[in-house]
Image 1: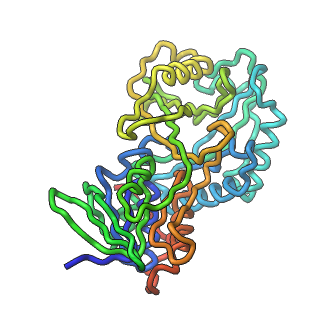
Image 2: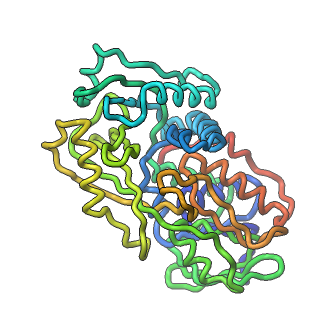
Length: 390
């Protein structure tokens, strides 16, 4: 007997589990197929931030920042064990490309987009207090601004969302390999392997949330679907021995003006990230020597005391970005949702996206495929579902 589902999702990253939660909350029968482990790829290799994206204001992504700040506020309420407010410090030196008035203007707009709530307030750190900023280099330092954003354990958050989905009836096949799919008039027939056993199922809608592996998934679907023009960009992070304690630092790389975060992480210090074009198998992504040197330069320039501390770990994740003329730093982080057809889609592929906005992205996915799904009695509202640590 062939299993039948309303929604089948391929990929157990944050967007895949978010769609699973939204589908199950809508009362739909749901299956998620994950090849290895939840958050086994990019969703465990991010910068661990739940934030509005202050730097996105520079490229005019007002809507994305507003949406992200709204989702940040929601996650602070729904997942207090997993998402925590942190102090962020933005130091500005004589050589910093962003001038104090520009940063102040950006922070003012950021606060306005966040509704001017208490946790959106920012301030200028008094010069007398600079000595308490984790050994921050004060040579040429002009101003330090303090504001607030949030931090999380990205892998644990992903697992918590999947637990929520499962509590609503969603099924998880893991580890399981997606083998093939055939699009039919009203859905798709799917083949996957779990525990050495071949399985088949039918679904009204197939969601491709495989992230860097999304092209590989599309290549296994008949008839061959179209895809978006995207490229993979890797972001590297270093974990350095020694703790940053006062908060998270938003610093500027002298080499190219990019924003880099220096933050506390599991008793040590996390530094990231980079943006390097990637070609090849997503499973082979590694921190490159040039990326290590770049991040080390930024860390040592701002915190000279770390020059004596070793790198104890490193990791790199892959972003899926739309092809464009802008540099990757300026490229849009908004999720692209690509259905196989405008009316009654059978297949939808997610490209890109932010950790912070996974829930609202899943909500958009379900609205886009609603015409393909049967009417069901909703089981819950994802805006009300609490998430807890394991």
